[in-house]
Length: 395
Image 1 (cartoon, rainbow, N blue to C red):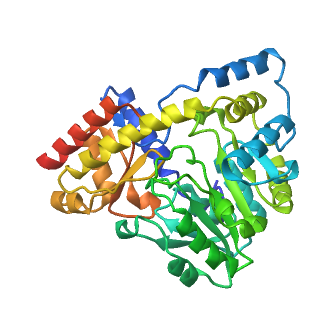
Image 2: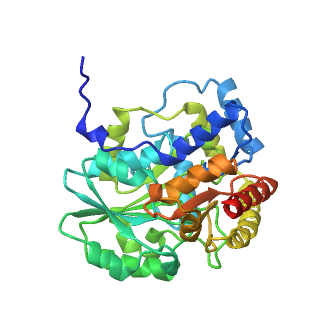
């Protein structure tokens, strides 16, 4: 029997970050000593007051279905957060709580993209963006960048990429995989281009907002260019900033008409997010934020050690980031020195000969690079860099 699959899903590749993490886990199960720098998952436990809120919710019987778009109290906490931290005003009809920020973005694309619509995606990009666009029958249009531009797009580049088919811009700052971020001035300049093209929606993926150490405070494009808010969808969540990856709570804020359609998509796919996780997320957003600052300080310490350490490795260079918990290392010289074909071969080489799992830059639209996560302890990072150095020096 021949099983016929959809052409849509045939275009989609498995997530490279998940694939590499699974491969590292398989090797560990075989008894190999593997250090995984492949997953973007904080090594901290979820803060105690957030866990306590979940336990209270269980004991209080909050174990039933909620509204598809989230509990009223969590939506209220999201509204308060966006006003407090970002200066953005929303009403409950403009908020959708989902099973992680990834589902928020998926819902958005399904609700707004038609066949042939173009979505502008700056590269390096989060690995899921292009494939989620394809699943919505859209066309991902990649805007390539380099270390010389800090892996950021320019207003001129944005303008030159816009066509009659352009429907959306994906904006991720701080970035996964580079850790780079746009300044307020850069956001203003990008916003001025977008103001000239009122048909273009903007998805501002702010999931790494709280992992931030740039000289100026974090700013979302809606805060800098308020005139864009009528076509801006802000996506965020609790996974990264609050060490809640497994709780699976993200949210989107945007025009009520778009959120309504996103709610329909979610209602016919997963329905509501976990009721217990929603109670925990409410405690995260509304409670003491000291835990966020403490974790961010640890991430910055790791970043400040790792960047110069990698720059001392033969054939490797990387620029300092402004947030998130990744470095994006240019390894073109190391690849050439080892006589390897590309960054995929280099990642395999390091996994086999150094016992260190990384993610090839090709998966992020930037061949010749590796993404290394520093969401792990400093001692682990030091051992990983020692192994990488030895593997590259020995060939």
